[in-house]
Length: 454
Ligand SMILES: Cc1ncc(COP(=O)(O)O)c(C=O)c1O
Image 1 (spheres, rainbow, N blue to C red):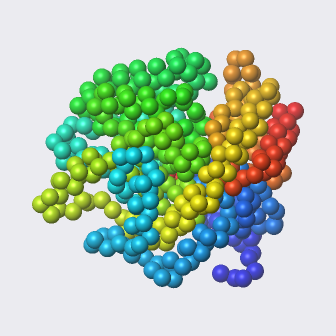
Image 2: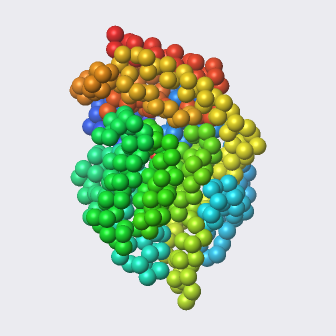
C-alpha cells in the first residue's frame, strides 16, 4: 500500500474486485464506493475529510461509538500477548473464559452455556445445528421444522437465510427449505387484524398454534423471533409479545430461539430485550453490540437442559462436531470484555436509556408530518415509515425511491442512517449519543424529508 492514498485508484479496484454485501451489484459498479477513512465518537470521515454523523452505529453494531480507547488498548494488548488460541483440543484463553462467565451471568437466568462464533448469521446457524443435534440425540428425531416471522431477519447463511423472511435473501438461493416456515409479522400498523395490539398479539399466538398443528408438534423443533424486527423495518410487536411466545412455545412443546443480534446490549434500553419481559429463551443469539463492531464475534447461549442433551450424546467420548477456527478468538473476546465494561461500569447503558427516552420523544414528533405514516421507536432503535397517503397508508410509488432520496439528501448534509427497500427509514444511534446529538439528527432528518417531499 502507498502512503498517500489515491482514492480514485482505490475506487477503481473496488469496482473491479470487491463483491459487496447486499448491494445491487451492477449499480455498485457504476456508483462506486463511499470510502470511509476514519471515525471518531459518532462521526465518520470520508475521503474528502467530510465529517458525517452516524445515526446507524455502522450496521446497528457500534453501540459504544467510535474511538473508545479502552477497547483499542484491550485489543492491542491481547494481540501482543496471545493473538490466537483455539478452543479445540480443550485449549482456551483467559479472555474467552472470562467472557463466557460474564455473558451467562448477565443473560436471562437459565442460559448457562455459550457457543462462540464470528457473527450473527453464524450465531443463528449454530442455534439451528445445536437444536437439531439436541432433538436427534435425545430421541426425538422427527422434530425438524423451524417457524419464523414474516419480515424476520436472521442472517444470510446457507440455512439461516431460509429463516430470514425478506424476499431478496430467498430469490435464486433455493430457500426457504421444506422445513422452514413463516407466520405473519406482529406488525400492528399493517396487520390484517391491526392496529389493536391485543388483537395482533392474539392473532400471532393463533397463527403459531395453527402452523404447529398443521405440521404436527412432534415435527416442530423451534420458533425463532427478534424482540423487535430490525431489518424488516423496525417492527415493534405489541407489549407482552415475547412472554406470549414463550408461553405458546411451552404449551406446544417447541423451543424458543430469541435473536437479539440487534436488540442486545442496550439497543432498546435494557441489556437484553427479553429480560425486560422476564423471558428466558431456550436459545439466545447475540453478536453486533457484543464487540460493538470493533472485532467480529457472536455468542449463542443455550440452557442447561440443551447442554445436558448434547453433552450426553458424547458420553462414549465422541466430540460434539461443531466449531470454527475462530470460535472464542482471544482478541475478539478481549474486545468484548472491554465493551462489556463500558456498558456496565462505563455508564453507557444508563446513558443509552436516558438519551433513548429523549430520542423516542424527538423522533415521534415526525409523526405529525403528512408523509409519515408511523414512527416506531424503542430506546435507540427507531424507524420512520413514509407514506403517500396517511389515511389509506398507501406507500409511495416504489419507482420514486423516496426513502433512498431522503437518505441521499441527508448524507450530503452530514447524516447517515438506513433506507429500507420499502420506504422505511431506520435509525440506531450509538449509546454514547448526547441529547444535543439527537437534536442534530432530528434537524437534519427533518430538513431532508422536507426537501424530498416539497
Ligand atoms: C436479528 C439478526 N440476526 C442475525 C443477523 C446476521 O448477523 P451478521 O450480519 O453479523 O451475520 C442480523 C444482522 O443484521 C440480525 O439483525
